Image 1 (cartoon, one colour):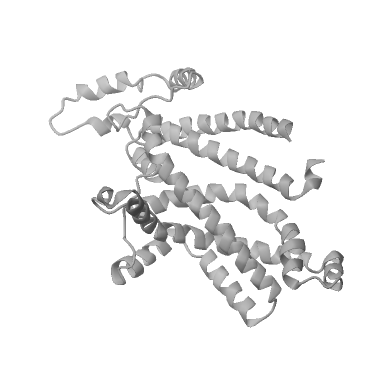
Image 2: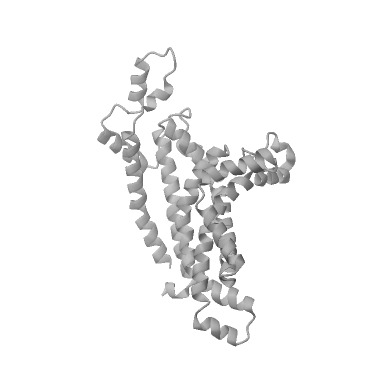
Length: 321
């Protein structure tokens, strides 16, 4: 298992490097000039050329790539154009914990609710409850997350005023004390995590239902029931573990969707996470910050896929052989 993990990590290096190289050329071929961010009314036009020369933007594209590659191999991703020359990893260090928190909570909620709904639908196959859950899951699965987020804000934040509409904490939340601050943070995360998890859990529920229906028709399930085992033991101990094998692979594949969804959610709810930082960097043509965000996101996704493979082997001992 350790050898397998090391091989996967080594294979991920050229993958991430290829993504960064592609990002480097795409953002430079896109229209827009990073130097325009610094131009204010009344500033001499010569300042633009000085800024472009300072950041090496006047160099031919291959020269820029070679310089960038040399810096990246030394672990230097540069300084942000739009954030007063702040090192890009300092910017990301402030935003990454917020995005990781949202992604982790969403991942847990996705699989918790998805598995529960999938099991209920499979056990109550073709019943009214099964049809109701199926229609509801398809309804939420097909709903755009940004539109759903806006509807949730209008209903629960503006109309009912049960939850805050934006921000990570109330103004002056530091005065609540550590526990009060923590509860306030959780209260602000309820709506965005709900928006992200409802869509994902609906898709997972469909996978779990299909997998459970296939498993509970197997001979060993009939044997377990014939032995007189309680139905809960048959479903959760014998059927569920084998039914979850295809679902485990969704852990890695769901991470890209969670991160892409977090990008819109963080902008809508005004969270200072990586999604919002990325959007602001794109509008400002902040090349170093865009590439560094791509590097961090790509690394997290690769590690998520690796985690899914490891969990697959843990759930099914045959994989280890």
